[in-house]
Image 1: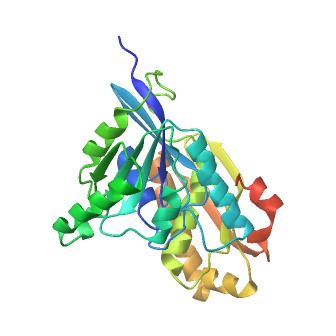
Image 2: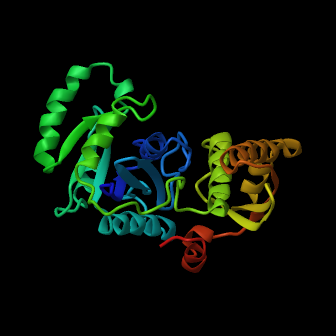
Length: 294
């Protein structure tokens, strides 16, 4: 039997073009957190799609940050460039109908020695599809893309076409992961990410990005998981925002995150969440490294 083609595929792009939504659509599970706010992805996260003839290991990356130079953003940018150095194929995600300075900055980072497939995302939001034609012509002059595929990650439009283009460039290496594996990240990591997603979703623009989640205890007894987590904020005022009146905001965040965990983990989760203030954490290089930032 012929070994399936397998390889690593980096998903890159400026913030808020839909990279995480695309990863989740490709894999069929919520592996990477999604928010209406830009820059919610902070780590490289691999989502694994196994087909009879191919295994795709998609690496979701933070949106490349060009405007801010803090330690957190420097670490995220290193995550992008590190991912590009070790993959077989690159998928560049750009919003259909828009090509901005941030997109052009990412194009300048693209490797010249590996195939790059361009995914024009959010096709469902583009009212005038004819506007794509001049954009396609212009993008072809920006970089020698192996293929250009308009898609909608939110609706699932032309996702199979995108997979077909990527598969053409996967090496015949045999499977890199087991057939039932969905990600290279641990349940502990995913638990923190689910909490962080709900944090951004419910607090919207009130809470700056100076918030993170630390899992202080993760114990499994049969199908039951006991998880203690701390939401760490940068200022005392942020603590009150997270807790909310009568603790209702924190309860909502924890409850929705727990439901996501139980669905993905396939068992009951006992989740305890509290809030702690640690001023200056986004610029603490040692702390960021301990949390898994490259």
